[in-house]
Length: 140
Length: 140
DNA sequence: AGGGAATATACCCATAAAAGCATATGCAAT
DNA sequence: ATTGCATATGCTTTTATGGGTATATTCCCT
Image (cartoon, rainbow over all chains, first blue to last red; front, side, top):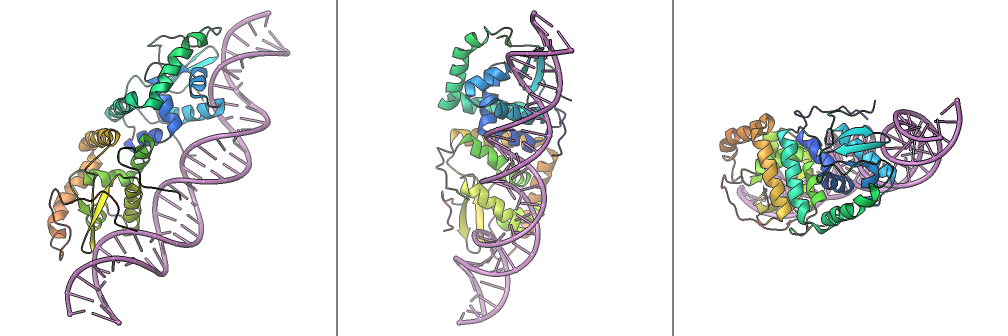
């Protein structure tokens, strides 16, 4: 698998669409639109296995579609702060499309209901709206 | 390959993105944004083989991303007249993104330069902006 | 140092996608 | 009917993708 991290500016349109053409990834991005999240939150809301979520996050990360920071044991994912014009336009478009869609809406509702109890865990990712972000993947 | 023609309204977001995640299809849609085109025009502008273009058009057609009418020997493809909100938003977004992009722009320029000579062919698809359109595929 | 928790990765399998070559289809004109 | 043209389809190969199971990594805590 030949992959490299695209610079945010140079991110190809096709690569953006490749990120968007899977239902699980769309659901993840829909959640991240409301703010940074750790894997366990995403996992619990989507009701999918840890591996599945983790792999899709890796896919998105490798293409600069999300950024991540480590917070103790937890990996906190966010939409990238600095975005190419293309990425920005498409994320906005996705938000438009998903905001009315019942399935996406349900995920967001579930997240809000779940969030308080999840945040009672020892020191899971806090419900802050704008955690510090890093541009590149910490995985090496 | 299990495929069916999506009703325009019910077209799933993921299916839209699947149509958009291939460079050749993006180039095709970029050209169609300027108006209906027959296969030979697309083929000549993109410089790709007939099979390749035809197959990608079939892919788009099967998902309601383009419509087609027969005009004598020629098949004239268009973007669908009636579009779901999602499709409309994404086509607009694509147009935004591709209008500045040098590669897409080059294709459009090439089309305009090529069009006059191509239209000298016996009775190739005319350079009309709004040919009659049909909603479904004529192929059976 | 050792254990537990959260997350990532390796490997495997089934399926889908992309492209090529060859061939078929449908229309028009002779 | 036959030929020629534009386009579509069938078959094949290669590669990518998505998901699963098992295992590794990285951190915190004791």
